[in-house]
Image (tube, rainbow over all chains, first blue to last red):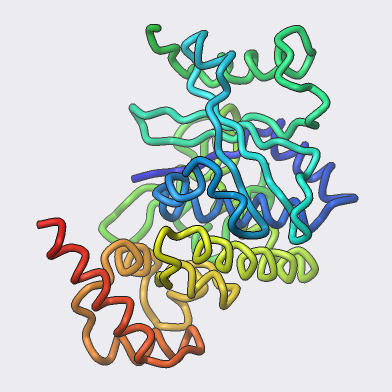
Length: 137
Length: 154
């Protein structure tokens, strides 16, 4: 059975964001709730360029830099009702052995997936802290 | 961490077991399934987080609106722009748990219905339509489409 956990740090980040962007956080929570109910929706949202067809919109992408290091991390990008790309990214890992999704971080887009950025280093730390395995490249 | 902090309802808290330090599990009376709801390292199960947010009326209203938006998006994102039971439920602003409560069913049954809605009993169709506020014919249309797609795949 699929389950989805929000790490303590990501929970804190969501609540900090909710102080100013409560509806953005509600949208993230509703999406995560639906993924836990039926992960197949990720396939619908993962279809290339599909996000241009509806609002609010979501795009799921592999985090290439981390995937190349054997870490199974994905990025959710969100567009709001007006079609504007939100400046936050939801970063999650999938543990296929236990069929568990782990929300690791809610990051500002400024971090731009730069592998020297403190958020990148923190993301790797959170992944490793959960004991998630690195797959072989 | 108290029961309320990790989002456990009163009924669930009766079955809450501290399985090891920092780890809390709800053992459901249904088929004796155990659900890990909080772990000091893993964090909070999303279902428990949602339960916690639903206790705040403003956050609950925000979640309802967000589900409605997500439901519309999922329908539009579908290749054939078709309705699905999950999209209809979300457009009504309901969680699986809330829909189960309205239909006097258990949440795992709602999850199963949404995954494979074919061949529903007439009383279930009527209860679903009433809870979702839609025409029963729409429910029948969804189940017929799913059955037809399943036959096509076979």
